[in-house]
Figure: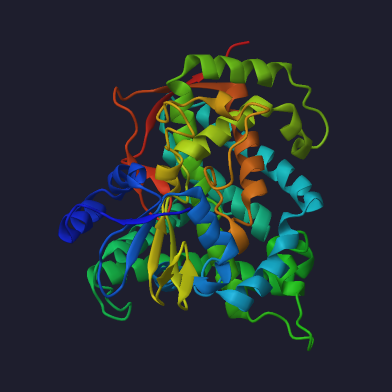
Length: 439
């Protein structure tokens, strides 16, 4: 039975700790109990740690919850796309986007992922030191625009990547602020955010115009699929809805994987045995045919990714807000109650993952199973990540191409520090030495 208990520390102390270092706050609260009341008064707020309670909220009682504040904040950037819509509209959008992640489509994506990563290999051959976060951001941006929009953004890559970073940084400031200043107020932060959004929208508008003029160029992409969608009355999606979905995929579809890969590559560099086993797998695996099928030949590579997702889940925090009163765990919760679920902290439950801070891909060796929602890097229920298989494919193929060509070494003597934005980033980037492999 899930128990709910009050936190012992004062409300102001909890708030200040949360704002200053949310990762530290949720990690401290994780061992305290199944569900912790933060004693916030008018709008009750709870931290949810128990897998059973997480399942109740994300799956069994899913229809009673909305995303709440996160939706309000993210709509400023992505509009009303899959990430921010609720209920029936969300289900409808998910239905027409889902075919973009079917197996036959993913097989086409696989070639694009390999091709874009090999372009990065050519650039890295002339480098001795790189910021791995910047490299991964630009790589995954080129992959998402090519696979989802059939578009090459190499000429604008830096400008677009910088705009994505700005929108993310501004969004998280709003999310964690006690007062949400309207977007229409011309503060310095709002103006900066608006300029970044306009940069991204300009690219999207150009692509959308080209797709209308030459639909045959885009038929195999998500954009082409959306343009072919019609409702029961034969109406196509509005330009705004297509644009909002493109913006959603642009932000959610590349920054998350880029951050994950940065963490994984830094961890591999700190664990020579892991890197040795990875190279042994890459050199002995029979990687023939469509790269999509290489997944089954690279089990250890995927174990590395799964362990990266455990320690550094990109979606490090999940918000849910009750849209109606609900009975759960033998007690009543009123409408407006907020529930915060932190996969970063839950994944560090030492009862489930002994020595939880250790990077150990063998936790995910064949035969090792974990109860539902003790490990859930892609969320769960109706709002689980629609692109989870794409993310696993992308990360696997990128690691395959990079490590066949290079050895990457950490430069800093201390470990990476988490920066919990919309996605979990390495704070201040992560410089690495690049050395070409000699066979």
